[in-house]
Amino acid sequence: MANESDQVEGQISSSRRPLTGILKYTVVALAIVWSLFQLFCAVNPISTPALKAVHLSFGLMIGFLVYPLIKTKSIRLKKVILATDILFALLSAITGAYIALFQEKISLHLGIPTTTELILGAILLISVLEIGRRVIGIGITLVCILSILYSLFGHYIPGMFGHGGFDWSQIIGQMYTSSEGIYGIPIDVSASFVFLFILFGAFLEKCGVGELFINLAMALFGRFRGGPAKVAVVSSNLFGMISGSAVANVVVTGTFTIPLMKKSGYRPHVAGAVEAAASSGGQFMPPIMGAAAFIIPSMIGGTYFNVAAAAFIPGVLYFLSIFFMVDFEARKTNLMPLPKSEIPSFREFGKKTLHLLIPILVLIYFLAVEKTSPIITSFWAIVSTVLVSFLRKHTRMDFKRILKALEEGGMGAIAVVAACACGGIIIGNISLTGLALSLSMLLVDIAQGSLILLLILTMISSLILGMGLTTTSCYIILAVLVGPALIKLGVSPMAAHLFIFYFGIISAITPPVALAAYTGAGLAGSNPVKTGFYAFKLGLAAFILPYMFVFGTALILEGPVFDVIESIITATIGIFFFAVALQGWMLVSLNLFERILSLICALCLIFPGWRTDLAGLALGLIIFLVQFTKSRKQKSKKQ
Image (cartoon, one colour):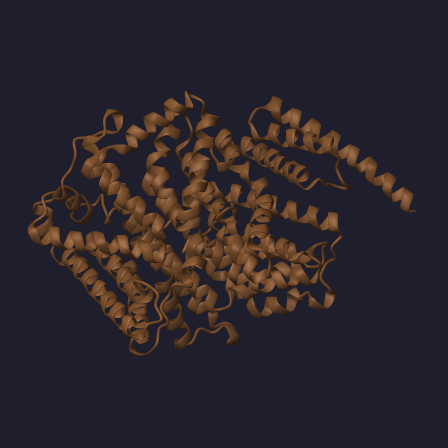
């Protein structure tokens, strides 16, 4: 989850201020101090209000210095803007310092802010709205403003969506001095352990894990048909396990895999789309998922390990679906494997870099075996990364590399902090007005008891929100508004929240705003729209997965072992035939009738139950036998 700026990362990087001189050293120093502070708090806990306040203050200060108020070429105006941004940064620090230093005093009059708190709360509210606009985009700021306006003027709305109305004092009290506003669950999760996982990803990158994953993928799959695309899928999967950002995945692995794909015969837009589709699954792939996955336990109970365990099988199935699509594309176009000279020797790179997998094993051990908290787990994973790096000279993390990792950890957390703080505003106003209950009741009424209709509405909402918001922001909004409605209709809480989370991620390859695909198009030198639609096509097989684990919770490990095994088998076959239907190819080309039968086969295997499973398996067997016969005939003609 390093640089977990989610889908917006590529969009926001261009709006950063060029850092030079004193400003550059100030930002670097703040990022390093922030990282060191979080590491210190992992082993020497401080009070939760103080941790959240300091955490948010660091994120706001660095954010205002890195992302300017507006972009301009005027030197005079640049100085005015810089002065304004410095003022924003200083005021943000003051608002956090007050919470950290006077938390006991605040607790004595909770809910009734003093004049000082009203002023500081208003400053913080404006600061969060502004950092959201700068880092994430105007979309999240508008949603926050709408939630505030709803709290202020909701008493003018008739019917079930109306409420008693709240004044500025009550809203500021909710936002600033309570634990249900800006300093609510999202910032709590970000401060507690999301930051440390981002930092862990930064340390892994600095010691060369990205190169290890690419070499490993090339050694395993480079020799097969369409090898470069399969390398892209596997390396993005591996890197996604420690990144959790779609755009970061595209940039890191795509820089290498996209030119390889183009060289082996893939069309540029296909190469960019393959990398984008493969990279988008990183946020759903344990052990380190996207930031929103860390918020799920706070919403439904349990631990992060429960979420990671539940997401593991769907995560693997996602990459399998992309792998099937890529393989059929390679078969259709008869693409060749990589030349043997370009395939790295496992023995050679294994000796040099395989030790870098130890920190990931340490992470999994502490989460899965010792069942320690994510805070302690991430701390020891970071420590083990530094220690393990000394096993080889070329991976050794000297003082300079460590400082760089600390810096990048802080810089990479800015977008998460902005998203979580804005999410706190939205959740705070929803909680204050009771909107979540009203909307949940309305959705249940619209669906008229139809779960499939409610799921489709949730999917569409998630895809639309995900186009303009980060996955974290998208998840927070829909988890509060739609999550209760899904659960009310009988969906497992874990399945409901993973469903919302999953489609927020898929929005990275869903046109018209498909930022992961557009990043891939930039690296491939292809048409962004064409790349976006092909990435969407590649990801279509993955669209059925959330419905699979909603209707068959064995896929998220809820149920007997036999049911889990059966679900894995039927789901794998289901996405295989869905990919067959989309690509029109299995052993040979499929005609329209065979493609329709393949689609029916896949849909039968989505819904749990032995009757639909048997029907799907029987239909799949018939299609395979037809394909096998046609393949034999084609081979005999060639001979």
